[in-house]
Length: 205
Image (cartoon, rainbow, N blue to C red; front, side, top):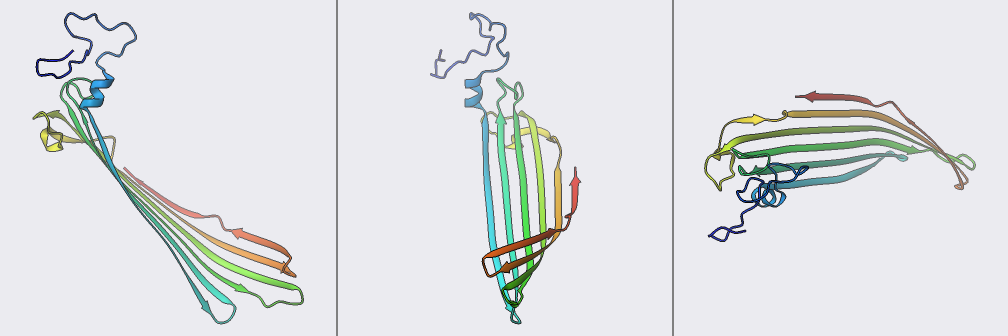
């Protein structure tokens, strides 16, 4: 069915002259109308970086630093119409912002012992550091003032934060020690000891 203007008229379950929806149908919902009239837009930006540095000193020592960092930003803008669906009858606009940062660092100092007969030892002492931070904010306003404008300023105040503003942080520190034994460069035995990580987690809501 179409209006005089050529626009479609969707059966929302309450049109005069049409039979009501049978039992089991969802009242107040219409998948086609909600898909066309609602907005669900988002942007995601990701920045990743990896680098390492090797420093040789004395004769048999090498210092290695590995650094990795990841930053992810997510921004979403949503609109639920005031005719049918969750936004009815007032209309609803919502915004979601989140920022996730991850930082990983591994510092190590290794040395290779001088060969004795057919046996050679190699030692490595390292230190791991992992830092994770997550910030999340979701808010919405209800009561659309002017049709066609889905900016939050076009909705009646107040701005409702739902469910909460979340900020989570996690830090993990762990020492690493590795010993490697080689015999005639054909047989190898490796012993790795990883100390229990010390973590610090913060959750602010």
